[in-house]
Length: 445
Image (cartoon, rainbow, N blue to C red; front, side, top):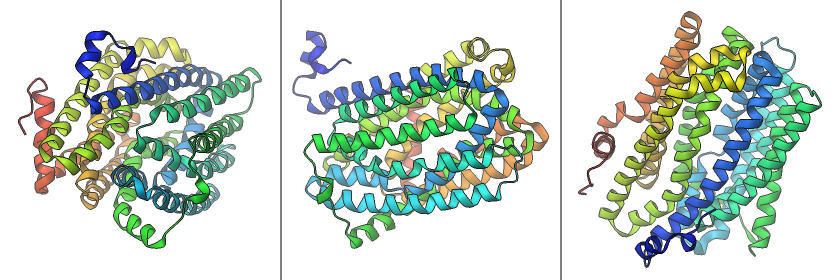
């Protein structure tokens, strides 16, 4: 991992006195190291696991993960982005914000688990392992309540700690998966391994926060603060559910209509694409606190940083999608083997999802800082409705190709189409267009 102090002398001189850039570089280095390790280990072990399970069982595991993910996307109740913003703006109120956020997450996780139990009971899919897999995967929501500690480290700009916790949990959990593959374990055991990774993360957060000297016992829940937090963040919760539905509802429809084998082919291709989705996440995690501070201190600087963020996201899309389009099919055949022939054909088309992913993540930072949560909810719900309707219409007729068309149409609606109806969002749409169409031009403000 390279920090500013390890850079060549001429680069250190350019960063001298520029605390924002130094802090952003150090944080992004740690997050990049974390994501590259998790991407590499997850890809190697994930491909091995997919080859071992075969398309059918791998497809049903993906089906269970999609159902639980749909529920857990709502259980955070949208507090994450708002919490990071408030912790960055008002460090003196950390104990109250952390206690309140933890209480909200704990209550919603319990409710989410009960919803998963109901969904598992109502499942009409005949595969024997689907119901128990849903229940096992849903247990992970209880451990995810401690992810609020990760948000505290993000707001403090201490990404090194978060990186070590996630990397350690990732390595241990994937070693467990390797042992399960060697032992010829059933598919249910791999669902449990994912939960164990979340449990290891939770233990790591507790260890890290105590080592830092913060006392979770001092965190307090304030009901008035909880009410204010929920009033502001509930549109983000709805947006999160809608965005997840856009991203994964196609897997539910494919599994229901086409079966586990087709879903396994689709999920394997999607996995290779989402490996590169870590890039905008790293940029977003580093940029969010800095853009929030710029919004507070200097509107012109805020506008410039947003434009730079969009420009970076578009360039990163080109850098990740083009190799997938050109080399992806051959790589898929090499990695997954002959039983996943359908994966190679799907990969170049699915690579275009990264365009919407990158710009959508950056747009989310704009929505948070402008407090346009209700508008974000409206656009996300509109996109989700388009996605659901098109999937139900096209997948039975066109198969997996219908799912790809549905996702592109819905992402376009959410990220771009409705922006013209809101003045501030319309200005932001122009900013995105300038960054995409003229990425070399400096933003004038």
